Image 1 (tube, rainbow, N blue to C red):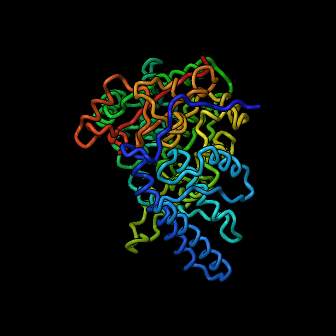
Image 2 (tube, helix red, strand yellow):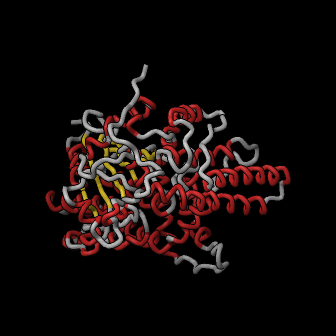
Image 3 (spheres, rainbow, N blue to C red):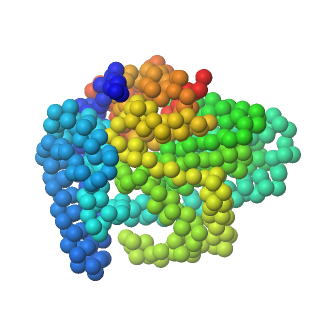
Length: 477
C-alpha cells in the first residue's frame, strides 16, 4: 500500500485574505469562465450544424452554472466521470476536504479542479470533445508577437549558420566555453521571462562578439530582478556530460505557455541540439486545455504550421480591427521557414519529442509524482536535466505551501529533491505567493517597496511577474 505523502507546511488557501489565492478565486476565475463562454458562443454562431449548435448551448449553460457557483461560494461537487482515470483521483482528493466551498479551499486543488471541470463539459459531449476553448486566444497572442518572433528568427538563423560553418571552432577552448555559457544563459533567460517585451535580453546570438555578450546592459538590468540564479550550475552539468563523451544526453522541458513562450522554448531546444549540449530534447505539454494558455499538443502543431506558411499566418486580418497587416519581406519569410525546417528536422529525426502525460493536469503537487506516476518519474530520472517552466510548475514543485521564503529550494521540492535521481531546474517568474530559497532579508526588503505588501503580510511583490527565481537541484549527487 502506498504511504500518504505529507507536506510539512500548509498550502495556500482561497480564504487567506493576504494571498493572491483570495483575489484569484473572487476576481480572476469568474472572468476566465466568462471568456470561455464568450469564445464558445462565437463558435456556436459560426456553426451551421444544428445538433452541434444545440449541444454547444448546453455546454454554455453548464459553464454559466459553474460561474454562478464560483461567484456565490457554493460547494465544489464531485466531477462527472468522463471515462478518464484522473476523475476518480480528483474526487478522491475532494472527499477529505469535507465539502469545501470555493472561497475556503486549498488554492492549487481548486484551480486545477476548475480547469478539469471546464474540460469535462467538452469531453462529455459528442461534437465538442476536442474543442479548445482557449485556442483562439493563444493563436491571437502569438500573432501579436510578430516583431519579436521575426527578430529572434533572424538571430537564430545567424547562429545556426555559424554552427554549420564551424565559426566556433576558430575560438580558443576557454573563449568558446565562455561564449557558449553566456549564450546558454541568454537563451534560458528569454525562456524565463517568456514574453516579447523582454526581447532586449537577446543582445546578439553570436560567437563573434564575446565582449558584447558579456557586457550587455539589458541583460545585466534584467538579471537584477532574478533573485536567485542557478543557471551556471545547470550549464556546468550539461557541459561536463558533453565533455565526457556521454552518448545519450537528454534534456526535458516541462512546458508552460503556448504562443511566443513555446516559440522561445523551441529556440532553446534547437540551440541545445545544434550545439551538442543535448542529443535529445523531450517536451512535456498538457494533455487537455489548461490554465488558459498552457501548451497542448495541438499548439505545437499550430506553431509549426504557422512557421511552415508564415506569409499566410501573418497576413490574417486583425480579428479586432479587421486591419490587414503588412506582408512579410522575403528575408523574414525565409528566416521563419528555416526555423520550421530546423525544428521539423529535429522532430523527424527523433531528437525533438513531444510527450504529454495526464499527470501534468492532475490536482497533485509534484511531491506525489514518484508514487502517483512512477513510470513518468523513472523516465525523468534518465534525463540530464529537467527544466520546469513557469509559475504553476513551481507551485506544484513546492506543493504551493506557505514555506518561509528562506527555506532551501532542495527542501521545498521534497521527493523531487536530493537523492531523487532527477536534476531539476525551475525557471519561474513570480506570479503567486509561494517562493523559497531567497537570501535572508530579501522578502522583507521587497515587501517594503511601495505597493509590494508592507505591513499587511501580503507578498504582493511576488504577484506581478516582475521578479524571478532560477533554482537548481542536483538530485543525482
